[in-house]
Image (cartoon, rainbow, N blue to C red; front, side, top):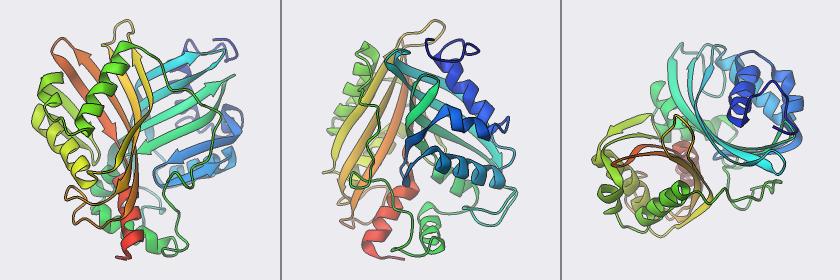
Length: 324
Protein backbone atom coordinates (compact mmCIF):
# COMPACT_ATOMS: atom_id res chain seq x y z
CA UNK A 1 0.00 0.00 0.00
CA UNK A 2 1.84 3.03 -1.29
CA UNK A 3 2.07 5.78 1.32
CA UNK A 4 1.00 3.52 4.21
CA UNK A 5 3.06 1.92 6.97
CA UNK A 6 4.48 -1.42 5.80
CA UNK A 7 3.23 -3.16 8.95
CA UNK A 8 -0.27 -3.12 7.44
CA UNK A 9 -0.96 -5.91 4.95
CA UNK A 10 -3.87 -4.19 3.23
CA UNK A 11 -6.48 -1.48 3.80
CA UNK A 12 -8.82 -3.53 6.05
CA UNK A 13 -5.77 -4.47 8.15
CA UNK A 14 -4.92 -0.77 8.45
CA UNK A 15 -8.45 0.21 9.53
CA UNK A 16 -8.86 -2.65 12.02
CA UNK A 17 -5.26 -2.30 13.22
CA UNK A 18 -5.28 1.41 14.01
CA UNK A 19 -8.69 1.10 15.71
CA UNK A 20 -7.27 -1.44 18.15
CA UNK A 21 -4.04 0.53 18.55
CA UNK A 22 -5.91 3.73 19.43
CA UNK A 23 -8.61 2.34 21.70
CA UNK A 24 -7.56 -0.95 23.26
CA UNK A 25 -3.79 -0.39 23.25
CA UNK A 26 -4.31 3.16 24.59
CA UNK A 27 -2.35 4.70 21.72
CA UNK A 28 -4.25 7.96 21.84
CA UNK A 29 -1.14 9.93 20.94
CA UNK A 30 -1.05 8.09 17.60
CA UNK A 31 -4.13 10.11 16.63
CA UNK A 32 -1.75 13.00 15.98
CA UNK A 33 -0.39 10.93 13.11
CA UNK A 34 -3.27 8.71 12.04
CA UNK A 35 -5.80 11.57 11.95
CA UNK A 36 -5.26 14.74 9.92
CA UNK A 37 -4.99 17.94 12.02
CA UNK A 38 -8.11 19.36 10.34
CA UNK A 39 -10.13 16.14 10.01
CA UNK A 40 -13.90 16.58 9.76
CA UNK A 41 -15.79 14.07 11.91
CA UNK A 42 -19.56 13.90 11.42
CA UNK A 43 -21.79 12.07 13.87
CA UNK A 44 -25.59 12.33 13.66
CA UNK A 45 -25.46 14.24 16.94
CA UNK A 46 -22.57 16.62 16.21
CA UNK A 47 -19.91 17.88 13.80
CA UNK A 48 -16.31 18.53 14.82
CA UNK A 49 -13.15 19.67 13.05
CA UNK A 50 -9.63 18.74 14.13
CA UNK A 51 -7.91 15.75 15.69
CA UNK A 52 -7.69 17.51 19.08
CA UNK A 53 -11.45 17.14 19.34
CA UNK A 54 -11.16 13.47 18.40
CA UNK A 55 -8.53 12.90 21.09
CA UNK A 56 -10.65 14.67 23.72
CA UNK A 57 -13.74 12.64 22.81
CA UNK A 58 -11.76 9.39 22.84
CA UNK A 59 -10.37 10.13 26.30
CA UNK A 60 -13.83 10.98 27.63
CA UNK A 61 -15.25 7.73 26.27
CA UNK A 62 -12.42 5.65 27.77
CA UNK A 63 -12.84 7.39 31.12
CA UNK A 64 -16.49 6.32 31.10
CA UNK A 65 -15.92 2.87 29.53
CA UNK A 66 -12.29 1.88 30.35
CA UNK A 67 -12.66 -1.73 29.20
CA UNK A 68 -14.20 -0.93 25.83
CA UNK A 69 -13.38 -3.29 22.96
CA UNK A 70 -13.92 -2.61 19.26
CA UNK A 71 -14.27 -5.85 17.33
CA UNK A 72 -13.95 -5.29 13.59
CA UNK A 73 -16.61 -7.39 11.85
CA UNK A 74 -15.97 -6.16 8.31
CA UNK A 75 -14.36 -3.45 6.21
CA UNK A 76 -16.05 -2.75 2.87
CA UNK A 77 -13.86 -0.38 0.90
CA UNK A 78 -13.14 1.36 -2.40
CA UNK A 79 -10.41 3.46 -3.98
CA UNK A 80 -6.62 3.14 -4.33
CA UNK A 81 -3.68 4.02 -2.06
CA UNK A 82 -2.56 6.63 -4.57
CA UNK A 83 -5.93 8.42 -4.86
CA UNK A 84 -7.21 7.64 -1.37
CA UNK A 85 -9.45 4.91 -0.01
CA UNK A 86 -12.84 4.94 1.72
CA UNK A 87 -13.62 2.27 4.30
CA UNK A 88 -17.06 1.40 5.62
CA UNK A 89 -16.04 -0.27 8.89
CA UNK A 90 -18.54 -2.31 10.91
CA UNK A 91 -17.65 -2.73 14.60
CA UNK A 92 -19.19 -4.67 17.45
CA UNK A 93 -18.26 -2.95 20.69
CA UNK A 94 -18.40 -4.25 24.25
CA UNK A 95 -17.99 -1.97 27.26
CA UNK A 96 -18.81 -1.61 30.95
CA UNK A 97 -20.14 1.70 32.26
CA UNK A 98 -17.54 2.18 35.01
CA UNK A 99 -17.12 5.97 35.01
CA UNK A 100 -19.31 9.07 35.18
CA UNK A 101 -19.85 10.83 31.87
CA UNK A 102 -22.28 11.72 29.10
CA UNK A 103 -24.44 8.72 30.02
CA UNK A 104 -24.69 9.87 33.66
CA UNK A 105 -23.35 8.36 36.86
CA UNK A 106 -21.48 5.06 36.52
CA UNK A 107 -23.90 2.13 36.62
CA UNK A 108 -21.67 -0.88 36.03
CA UNK A 109 -23.90 -1.84 33.09
CA UNK A 110 -22.31 -4.16 30.54
CA UNK A 111 -23.04 -3.08 26.97
CA UNK A 112 -22.93 -4.59 23.49
CA UNK A 113 -23.61 -2.32 20.50
CA UNK A 114 -22.54 -1.65 16.93
CA UNK A 115 -20.84 1.22 15.13
CA UNK A 116 -20.65 1.91 11.40
CA UNK A 117 -17.93 4.34 10.30
CA UNK A 118 -16.98 5.62 6.86
CA UNK A 119 -13.37 6.86 6.83
CA UNK A 120 -11.28 8.32 4.02
CA UNK A 121 -7.55 7.61 4.25
CA UNK A 122 -4.52 8.56 2.18
CA UNK A 123 -0.81 8.54 3.05
CA UNK A 124 -1.36 6.63 6.30
CA UNK A 125 -3.81 9.22 7.58
CA UNK A 126 -7.58 9.57 7.94
CA UNK A 127 -8.84 13.01 6.93
CA UNK A 128 -12.63 12.65 6.60
CA UNK A 129 -15.12 10.60 8.65
CA UNK A 130 -18.83 9.80 9.04
CA UNK A 131 -19.54 7.78 12.19
CA UNK A 132 -22.80 6.33 13.52
CA UNK A 133 -22.90 4.73 16.95
CA UNK A 134 -26.01 2.80 18.00
CA UNK A 135 -26.89 5.28 20.72
CA UNK A 136 -30.35 3.86 21.31
CA UNK A 137 -28.85 0.41 21.96
CA UNK A 138 -26.58 1.96 24.59
CA UNK A 139 -29.27 3.96 26.37
CA UNK A 140 -31.84 1.14 26.25
CA UNK A 141 -29.35 -1.24 27.89
CA UNK A 142 -28.93 1.38 30.61
CA UNK A 143 -32.67 1.46 31.22
CA UNK A 144 -33.46 4.70 29.38
CA UNK A 145 -36.08 5.36 26.73
CA UNK A 146 -34.22 7.11 23.85
CA UNK A 147 -36.62 10.07 23.83
CA UNK A 148 -36.38 10.56 27.59
CA UNK A 149 -32.59 10.19 27.50
CA UNK A 150 -32.42 12.86 24.80
CA UNK A 151 -34.65 15.23 26.76
CA UNK A 152 -32.38 14.78 29.79
CA UNK A 153 -29.25 15.24 27.65
CA UNK A 154 -30.51 18.57 26.29
CA UNK A 155 -30.99 19.78 29.86
CA UNK A 156 -27.52 18.56 30.93
CA UNK A 157 -25.95 20.31 27.95
CA UNK A 158 -27.44 23.63 29.08
CA UNK A 159 -30.82 23.69 27.41
CA UNK A 160 -32.00 24.16 23.81
CA UNK A 161 -29.90 27.27 23.13
CA UNK A 162 -26.63 25.90 24.51
CA UNK A 163 -26.82 22.17 23.70
CA UNK A 164 -24.75 20.44 21.03
CA UNK A 165 -26.55 20.74 17.70
CA UNK A 166 -27.20 17.60 15.62
CA UNK A 167 -25.75 17.24 12.13
CA UNK A 168 -27.72 19.05 9.40
CA UNK A 169 -26.82 20.30 5.92
CA UNK A 170 -26.62 23.78 7.48
CA UNK A 171 -23.81 22.92 9.92
CA UNK A 172 -22.03 20.18 7.97
CA UNK A 173 -18.42 20.99 7.12
CA UNK A 174 -16.76 20.24 3.77
CA UNK A 175 -14.01 17.64 3.84
CA UNK A 176 -11.40 16.60 1.29
CA UNK A 177 -13.16 13.42 0.14
CA UNK A 178 -15.45 13.96 -2.85
CA UNK A 179 -15.72 10.36 -4.08
CA UNK A 180 -18.94 8.40 -4.54
CA UNK A 181 -17.54 4.86 -4.16
CA UNK A 182 -17.26 2.35 -6.99
CA UNK A 183 -19.41 0.87 -9.76
CA UNK A 184 -19.36 -2.74 -8.56
CA UNK A 185 -22.62 -4.55 -9.36
CA UNK A 186 -23.38 -5.41 -5.72
CA UNK A 187 -23.24 -1.81 -4.60
CA UNK A 188 -25.58 -0.90 -7.44
CA UNK A 189 -27.92 -3.76 -6.59
CA UNK A 190 -28.16 -2.70 -2.95
CA UNK A 191 -28.62 0.95 -3.93
CA UNK A 192 -31.49 -0.11 -6.20
CA UNK A 193 -33.11 -2.14 -3.39
CA UNK A 194 -32.96 0.75 -0.89
CA UNK A 195 -34.24 3.20 -3.51
CA UNK A 196 -37.20 0.92 -4.22
CA UNK A 197 -38.00 0.59 -0.51
CA UNK A 198 -37.78 4.35 0.03
CA UNK A 199 -40.02 4.77 -2.99
CA UNK A 200 -42.69 2.71 -1.16
CA UNK A 201 -42.07 -0.43 -3.24
CA UNK A 202 -42.19 -2.72 -0.23
CA UNK A 203 -42.54 -5.70 -2.55
CA UNK A 204 -38.78 -5.38 -2.99
CA UNK A 205 -38.37 -7.11 0.37
CA UNK A 206 -39.78 -10.48 -0.62
CA UNK A 207 -38.37 -10.17 -4.12
CA UNK A 208 -34.79 -9.35 -3.10
CA UNK A 209 -34.25 -10.56 0.49
CA UNK A 210 -33.55 -14.16 1.47
CA UNK A 211 -36.51 -15.54 3.46
CA UNK A 212 -33.99 -16.39 6.21
CA UNK A 213 -32.44 -12.90 6.19
CA UNK A 214 -30.70 -11.81 9.40
CA UNK A 215 -31.18 -8.11 10.16
CA UNK A 216 -29.42 -5.84 12.66
CA UNK A 217 -31.01 -2.43 13.24
CA UNK A 218 -30.87 0.54 15.68
CA UNK A 219 -31.61 -0.20 19.30
CA UNK A 220 -29.65 -3.43 19.04
CA UNK A 221 -32.63 -5.02 17.28
CA UNK A 222 -31.89 -8.41 15.73
CA UNK A 223 -34.45 -9.86 13.34
CA UNK A 224 -35.01 -12.99 11.29
CA UNK A 225 -36.88 -13.27 7.99
CA UNK A 226 -38.89 -10.62 6.14
CA UNK A 227 -41.19 -9.23 8.84
CA UNK A 228 -38.57 -7.35 10.93
CA UNK A 229 -37.10 -5.87 7.74
CA UNK A 230 -40.52 -4.70 6.60
CA UNK A 231 -41.34 -3.29 10.03
CA UNK A 232 -38.04 -1.41 10.28
CA UNK A 233 -38.02 0.26 6.87
CA UNK A 234 -41.79 0.91 6.94
CA UNK A 235 -41.57 2.48 10.38
CA UNK A 236 -38.76 4.81 9.33
CA UNK A 237 -40.28 5.86 6.02
CA UNK A 238 -43.75 6.28 7.53
CA UNK A 239 -42.34 8.84 9.99
CA UNK A 240 -40.89 10.93 7.15
CA UNK A 241 -43.01 9.98 4.12
CA UNK A 242 -42.16 13.09 2.11
CA UNK A 243 -38.50 13.40 3.08
CA UNK A 244 -35.89 13.35 0.35
CA UNK A 245 -33.92 10.09 0.26
CA UNK A 246 -30.41 10.48 -1.12
CA UNK A 247 -27.55 8.03 -1.59
CA UNK A 248 -24.22 9.77 -1.03
CA UNK A 249 -21.84 6.84 -1.29
CA UNK A 250 -22.03 3.24 -2.50
CA UNK A 251 -19.49 0.42 -2.53
CA UNK A 252 -19.78 -3.12 -3.78
CA UNK A 253 -17.13 -5.81 -3.31
CA UNK A 254 -16.28 -9.37 -4.29
CA UNK A 255 -13.47 -10.64 -2.04
CA UNK A 256 -11.96 -14.11 -1.50
CA UNK A 257 -13.61 -16.09 1.32
CA UNK A 258 -16.35 -13.46 1.63
CA UNK A 259 -19.90 -13.24 0.23
CA UNK A 260 -20.66 -10.44 -2.24
CA UNK A 261 -21.39 -7.36 -0.15
CA UNK A 262 -22.21 -3.68 -0.28
CA UNK A 263 -22.07 -0.53 1.83
CA UNK A 264 -24.34 2.49 1.32
CA UNK A 265 -24.24 5.87 3.08
CA UNK A 266 -27.54 7.72 2.75
CA UNK A 267 -29.67 10.50 4.19
CA UNK A 268 -33.34 11.32 4.68
CA UNK A 269 -34.09 15.04 4.87
CA UNK A 270 -37.54 16.47 5.40
CA UNK A 271 -40.48 16.95 7.75
CA UNK A 272 -41.62 14.64 10.52
CA UNK A 273 -45.12 14.60 9.05
CA UNK A 274 -46.14 10.97 9.30
CA UNK A 275 -47.12 8.39 11.91
CA UNK A 276 -44.29 5.90 12.38
CA UNK A 277 -41.64 4.93 14.91
CA UNK A 278 -41.22 8.56 16.05
CA UNK A 279 -44.78 8.95 17.24
CA UNK A 280 -47.16 11.84 16.68
CA UNK A 281 -46.18 13.91 13.61
CA UNK A 282 -44.64 17.18 14.71
CA UNK A 283 -43.69 18.87 11.45
CA UNK A 284 -40.10 19.15 12.69
CA UNK A 285 -37.45 19.31 10.00
CA UNK A 286 -35.23 16.27 10.47
CA UNK A 287 -31.97 15.14 8.90
CA UNK A 288 -31.24 11.43 9.19
CA UNK A 289 -27.73 10.13 8.45
CA UNK A 290 -27.70 6.39 7.82
CA UNK A 291 -25.19 3.73 6.86
CA UNK A 292 -26.24 0.29 5.63
CA UNK A 293 -24.26 -2.82 4.82
CA UNK A 294 -25.51 -5.97 3.14
CA UNK A 295 -24.28 -9.46 2.28
CA UNK A 296 -25.76 -11.44 -0.60
CA UNK A 297 -26.20 -15.18 -1.08
CA UNK A 298 -27.81 -17.59 -3.54
CA UNK A 299 -31.35 -16.68 -2.37
CA UNK A 300 -30.94 -12.93 -2.16
CA UNK A 301 -29.86 -10.43 0.48
CA UNK A 302 -29.01 -12.63 3.45
CA UNK A 303 -27.64 -10.21 6.10
CA UNK A 304 -28.39 -6.52 6.55
CA UNK A 305 -26.87 -4.04 9.00
CA UNK A 306 -28.29 -0.51 9.20
CA UNK A 307 -27.64 2.24 11.71
CA UNK A 308 -28.92 5.72 12.32
CA UNK A 309 -28.95 7.54 15.66
CA UNK A 310 -32.45 7.57 17.16
CA UNK A 311 -31.38 10.05 19.84
CA UNK A 312 -30.17 12.56 17.22
CA UNK A 313 -33.55 12.34 15.52
CA UNK A 314 -35.37 12.83 18.82
CA UNK A 315 -33.12 15.79 19.58
CA UNK A 316 -34.16 17.52 16.36
CA UNK A 317 -37.82 16.81 17.09
CA UNK A 318 -37.64 17.97 20.72
CA UNK A 319 -35.72 21.14 19.87
CA UNK A 320 -38.35 21.99 17.25
CA UNK A 321 -41.40 21.26 19.40
CA UNK A 322 -39.99 22.62 22.66
CA UNK A 323 -41.29 19.52 24.44
CA UNK A 324 -38.51 19.68 27.01
